[in-house]
Length: 96
Image: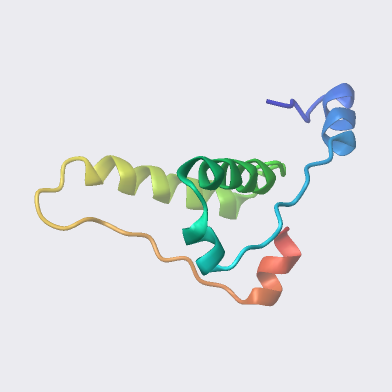
């Protein structure tokens, strides 16, 4: 994990370039072998998780809500608790 709180860590974060996986259709994804699909998904996960998380009060509240529901779901006997996220596409683009 890159420590972005230091000058060196921030430089490493800024200088690291991750290649965005080429988009594929659902038919192409289904046609992939198990191994190829695993590699494709690994590349997608690495690319999507490469960004830094800024710990805003809203992010902290979201993180607490997710943790609470995951913990509580372990004890539920019927049904599961969920979490609904909503927001406009314009707002989502601003946060990336």
